[in-house]
Image (cartoon, helix red, strand yellow):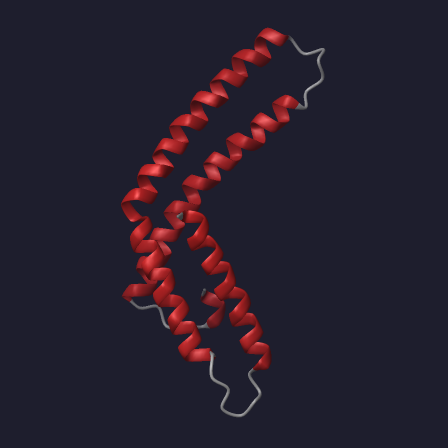
Length: 125
C-alpha cells in the first residue's frame, strides 16, 4: 500500500492495523502447517512414538491458533473488509481515470493491487 505513495489517513492506518493483525495470526497457523508437513516427510526410521507425540502437540497448537484467528476475524474482520473496500475505492478514484492516456502502466499495477486486496478480503470471509 505504501508503494502507491498515498497519504496515510485514519482509514488507511485502521486498514493496516486490522490487516496486519489478521496476517500475523494466519501466518502462525501457516507455520504450524509447515511444521506438520515437515514432520510427515521425516523418514520412518525416526521413533514413531516421538512423531506421534509431536504431531499431537502440533495439532493442539494449531487448534488454539485457529481459534484465536477465528475470534480476531469475528472481531475485526468486518472492519478490515470495510477498510479494504474503502481503500480499493480510493485507489480506483485516484488512479482509475486516465486524463492523458499515459496511466496504462499505473492502471495495471493498481488493478493487480486491487485484485490482491479483494482476494484477501474474500479469503478472510
